[in-house]
Amino acid sequence: MTITHLVTHSGGFHADELLSSVVLTGLFPHAELRRSRDPRWIAPAADRIIFDVGGDYDAARQIFDHHQRPSPLREDGQPLSSFGLVWAHYGRAYLEALGVPAGSIEDIHSAFDTRFVLPIDLLDNGAIEPSVAGPLSVLTLPALFESLKPVFDDPSPTADDDAFLKALPIARSFVEAFIGNLAAKGRAEGMVLDAIARAGASPVLELPMGMPYRSALEKAGAGHMLFVVMPRGPDWTLNGIKLSDDTFDQRADLPAEWAGLTDAALEAATGVKGAKFCHNARFIAVASSRDAILKMAELAVKAVRGE
Image 1 (cartoon, helix red, strand yellow):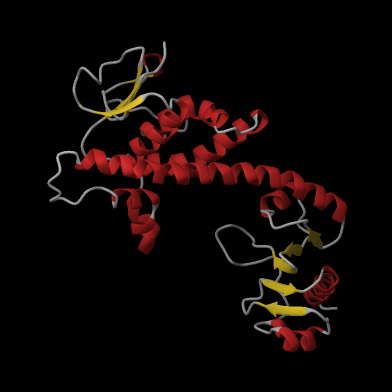
Image 2 (cartoon, one colour):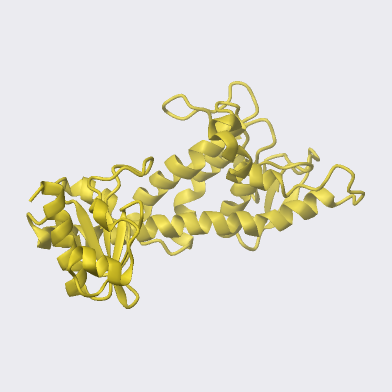
């Protein structure tokens, strides 16, 4: 039977049912999204999907709540919110509807679950505290969604529903952008692996354009590579390789004597015509041509090796 209604609870909203709504309205664009606590609406039926309300989790009956006891858990024992339940059952179809290639769906489904869905699940269930984000806690995605709720003294009887519907396209933009970036990362990985193979034993990786590359370096076991060069508009860049996403530390820094220099001063320090800029933190340098940036890369490698 065709899904005609997507049902969640009325009143205030949280990130989990808002993000569940993104997935379900994207997959069933012609279904009506109804926010209600009326027992007639939250009773399972073949033509509706019920989420974050109803006191039950039963995929066969299309009801996805997590507030009951015992509450649903992941295989590793971590708690699920309605978002985790909806993603587990409808995420792959949603990715297909977004045009994700069939061969990438499993990888992207898993990566999105780990990096985007799981934090929402944990926070919604109180398994982690917002304070883990420190002073950035008020800028996390769930907190920003909370800020879209109506103020306490909004007199409109439809204030909550109006706010929810205004928040929905904002939430959708984050979900689709995150998935788009995961898909792009997958496309980039193949290109980077090809470039690593071409580079062989060289400590410098040359890429045809700006793209994510660190995960491919790790996958290829290319620990010998110290720097990456790539075009950026009319210029070329020489980049350090971060040790991880959680640090600014690099495998190797650019030479200390280049730090903060530009144009003629950097040309004098490097002896390279066309050298234009080196960041004071020594993680990126810019030159006006490929030849110039490769000469700077050669100098940077020699400096690291003490040659």
